Image (cartoon, rainbow, N blue to C red; front, side):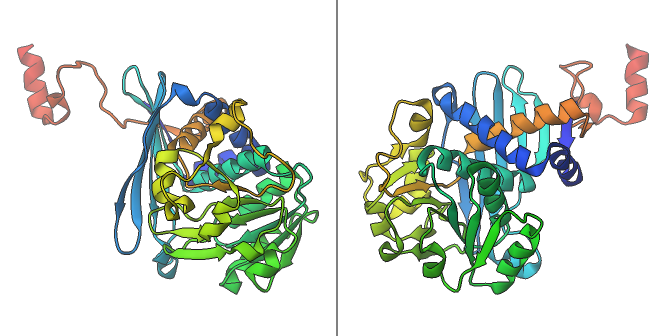
Length: 349
């Protein structure tokens, strides 16, 4: 049987663990797998683009487990009362191919995305970072804010969105965290002024320039999260040229990340090498660092294995017959025979 986690079960699981604890746990789990980078069979995700969005499959495996995520990105969905991003995923046993977990990943992807940003900032941002700017206040914004407040010591966040209702929603949701000061900014430039960390999480599928060179200050760390598919960017190319840029999986980021604007030989640093201690991250306090985050399958692998272990430990989820039982592994036809036919077969036997 395959363990199944639906949305209500995922909500209960995260509440049982604690949302901030879950963010920290996921950052640790993702880092553990990134340090073991050579152990994984990796590839860029398979994407099917349309005029209004994209649908993607994201596979990865090691010697023991295989995982994939189905995920979409449709910015116009909010006008239809639908989420921009929705996902589900599978964790399977490599030895048999048997699926051990089928899980919702819409909520979990929001958690793994902020956990990945947190993991990168722990390695790249200045240790004394206390002020953050958050550009884009949609579905991912509260997760980013809370992860950085709870685990990196950020105590003030300046927020901005072209939709004031999104900002109002974010402020309302975070009002239960009195130690976190939220400042409503009147523009992107106002939000990023004096920020130690800038996180961009915009959704429009367009070549945007959310951050321009004159906004950048010495020592900033930038998490560019929203530029994550061909033709979708957030950072002016000169922001990248003036920074030390870090990526998840370079072949994918070259096509999907903000560095798609630059020549293929533009130098970048593999984040996993920094985490493994074989490459330098930030080289000095005044250096501008950019994590050109597009989301990589290994992060979902880490998330699925973490959720599977936590669900089993807590007895959450249900077992479903996602694949047929194998009473006779050479007889698959028995699953479609009528009851009369099955009875006749038993009499003959």
